[in-house]
Image 1 (cartoon, protein in one colour):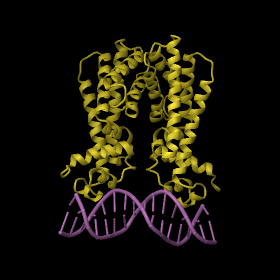
Image 2 (tube, rainbow over the protein chains, first blue to last red):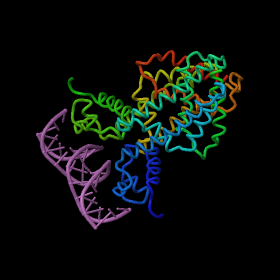
Image 3 (cartoon, rainbow over the protein chains, first blue to last red):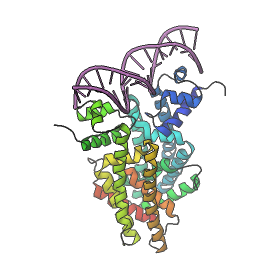
Length: 188
Length: 188
DNA sequence: CCTACCGATCGGTAGG
DNA sequence: CCTACCGATCGGTAGG
């Protein structure tokens, strides 16, 4: 291995933050993961906090992109919900480290950056809620409480980061199918 | 406040581990929470690890007790699932700190203690799975995959620790009702 | 439960 | 990217 790029450092940080938590990872651990000393990381980044901001930010952008795409769609609510679920499963299964860090470590962000992530998460959930509310109006769904229904569906989706393993018996496609069916049964 | 009991220390540890994570909590933080010095805690406990073992163990026992109770019941599968859901919601809403530490910090347990908790968690999920499999045999449920179905229901249940706030608009009873309905729709 | 510490480790810097 | 550090903080102990 030659010299490392800033990208390599951020990626390795995501790996360790996901596996051991932000506070359970030292800059020396991260250096070791990359085959260099902890102090050498400071030629790539300004601080440990900055690494967390970057990894969480990258995770947030993935979900942000999905919700933007769905919000712009003209599809009926049940199709939108299914697309949101499939997209969410794809993000978590294809970007496990960033997803885990985004979902589990965002609370350790410096306050100035935390509010932006909270706002983004709120917007994500609000989009979900509005699509469900729209489905209730068009009578595609019979759920009475859109806020609660969106939380329950998001619970199933976000919990995936806790149990998904690429080596497991279910591939992302099967998982997404099952979640779409489960959510539709709960909403319809 | 007079002198603190060992119980007080364990309880405060649960509070801080839940709020800041095990690695985000120092013994000095914990001392401050109790109005004494970090070093004074060692007259109550042997190590920081011991506190984690105790808090996670207390959390594990709560869920263990629930699963034992349901496993001994002769009720039909759909009733058992509903009881499991209501019990699970009760534990999380009534013992937030222990539940959060059990669910989020068990991975930081010393290896010797970790395996016992993993085994207990596996048993909890296995019970869930068997009840669902039983319901499929008696044709109370139509889900095809008991392993997947139990994971999805448990996802909804465990995610509660992430969003439940006693000051929120939904009380535990309403939450449990909604989760029972959601799970039954997904299974039936 | 405090005083007074200990060695180890932390995030981070200066200079090359 | 390493050498050689820095002050701060960590978990923990001896003795009272």
